[in-house]
Image (cartoon, rainbow, N blue to C red; front, side, top):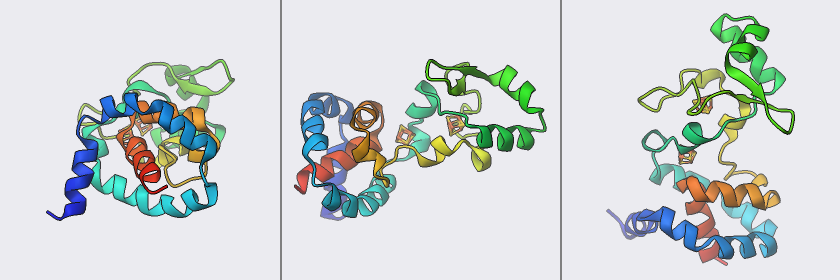
Length: 166
Ligand code: SF4
Ligand code: SF4
């Protein structure tokens, strides 16, 4: 194990408590960050975070939050399941306050007990992009990033590293 690995593991120990304690710092950082510098760092930090965190041991996103099911998602997934779009919507989705289709039940009905997604190949694009740690969304939508940092260790890891390199 090299020094970097040890540091990354230390960073992830008790990450929920540390993330809760650092929310104000994250907020300040997201308001004032040098966006160009941060954007250049994101691809590497995103890859490092996914090396350190096993989503299959976590699944916090799939257990507690719903992606938006946009029209192309609904078309693709219902076709994959051999269902009519209307039947798929009726069975699995509700409209939320913002007019987006989201899952009716939590955890997501497509999450297995082993934390695998049963529609992984055709999952909604929100799921494919989550937690946006390799996109400018991370900097452009600070409220979303802060919320994600409270339950997603990958978001937490990337924010901590961005702040440490200021
Ligand atoms: S919450 Fe973050 S770390 Fe956990 S499964 Fe989702 S993307 Fe992976
Ligand atoms: S569709 Fe799959 S990846 Fe998306 S929330 Fe449900 S289980 Fe998770």
